[in-house]
Image (cartoon, rainbow, N blue to C red; front, side, top):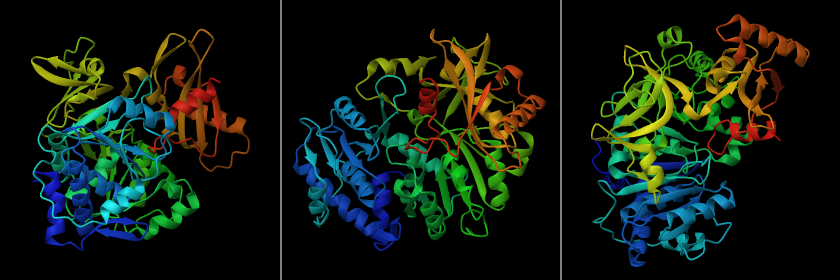
Length: 508
């Protein structure tokens, strides 16, 4: 069991300094270098005499120096706020305003100024990293100290800074390293999610704590399908971590299978719903690999449920479960009055346990609304709808704020998307509402990447899809009125289908 994240990573440097910690397209760095660079940065931050525990912003991409910077910051007793290089300028300045950081570190060159916030530039950082210091970690982040702050996407209003403590992170990492997942030793783990997205903690947290190697896949590669499919086979991966949307892209390549990736034995998914079609396809391509579906809001540290998607699970559940709650966590399904509902009844998922955040940075109003006291205990209101079955498995049913009303019917958009993903002619598809001038939903529109077929016209394809949907379990009022066919769907920097941009385009 890991008792301290900083010590766990440093220990590998002391035991085996040449052990590989990071592989960036063949350029490698060791645990010895991770310790040396983070020690040098921690000593420098100490010399700046910053306010104790004040957060430090970090701007950069998928690089080893980002990892060394994060570790250096927590060694000096500060939390870090990761911001990805693909963030809009407004987001960078907004986070700077909200977080009120003691300093900012530009691992990559900052594209904007940050007012009075002192900035360690990329050149400064290189100079600092080249120093060799004898650093003793005696005031590092520990216990309930905040380890990192990840800002949510801010779909409505300003983004919220979710504070994750060292205790929260330990609860999560120790669970990942438990028998629930039995991750391979010395794993080479895919690091594709940006470090400003908490899915990335699923790759770097357990991997670096256990002495494995993070294998970076930068956005410049993932944005270019040819480069992606040329790069993936060279990475020698053991553990795959991504959103389902990203693996859907990879499954477009016929050679993405066990024959060409014999070392790839674990698939871990989080961040959005894993469809039955994706899991079944993956199971067929990698019959001996273990596939895990997980679920969890950023506010509860990455994930709090898991289930292995076996052939039996695929046979039993047309819509896949999100799993069982981890041992130290309680998940309760509640009604509008926050009262528990019987097994099999839909309600909001309420979560409590040692991986639950202390709340949003400098935002007591939003914290009070999301983190509520029930029976004398603080719980997190997820805003997610779910059902707990008699066997303890939890089924995800969508967002409380992803419900629409069309012609008097209440419709869950994610349920519509579930049926679209099951349809034979559809590779990937999402349904979005079109609003009228009174801001009421007037139409449901599906954006679809079609599978290869012999159907020659879009009209005939739409007819075939609608017939299949009507012949299945889908209620007729849920079937989109219009289908728009695309070669690909827009993606967010976090690797999810960008539903917001589709809704915006549909409602121009």
